[in-house]
Image (cartoon, rainbow, N blue to C red):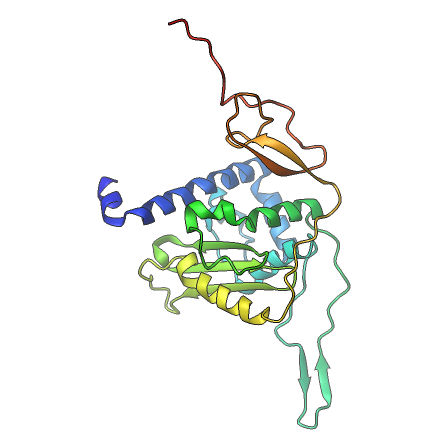
Length: 264
C-alpha cells in the first residue's frame, strides 16, 4: 500500500523482492508434487512433515513445522554433495577416570539422495553474493569473507527467523524467537539469526583455510542473456556466464530483446 511504502521505505521494497523470489519455488513444487517432495525431505532427515492433509504449496514458504537440527541436517546433505548426514547430540561419555563408557560411531556413508551436480548448483546459487545484493545489500551478515552457501527465513509476523548455511567444512543453523512464540518487532532472518550465524561460523573457522566448494564432473558454463536465461542474440544488452548440468544448456534464443524497423 502507499501508506506502507511511505512508512517503511526501503524495507518494504526488500521484502517485496524477497517475496517475488519465492514464486519459482512454488511453481517447481507444483510440477513435482507434494508427496515426492515430502519423501525427499524424509530422506534428508526432516521427520515432522508427515501429515499430507495439512501440507500444500505453501510449504515452500515455510508452511510447516520443522526442527532446527533436522533443517540443518538437510542443508548438510547439500554440503555433502547430496549424501544425507547422520547427526548425534551425544558424541561420547567418559567417567571421571577418563574411561570411555560410550562413543558415537556414525554409520557408513549413505547413498546419494540428491544428484551431486544438482547439489552443487544449489550451493552455487546460495553462495552467490551478487544475487543477494538486491535484498540484503553489499555488507550483509551472510558474507563471511570465504565461500559460504546460506539461506535466511522469516515467519509471518516475526514469530521466528532462521539462518542456515555452510562452508565445505561446517554447517551451522540458527533460530531466533521467543520461547512463548510471541512475535518479535521486525526481526528478520538477516537481522536476527544472521549476525549470530556470522559470528559463530567466523569464530569456528578462524584458523581454518578458505576452501571453495568442489565442482563435480558434468557441470559446464555457457553464456546466456541475463534477462531471460536463454541464449543471447545480437540485441541482448547484458550477458552473463551461467553454470548448467551437461545437456541442459538452453537451445532457444532470447526473445525479450528484439530489433524492429519502424517506418516513421
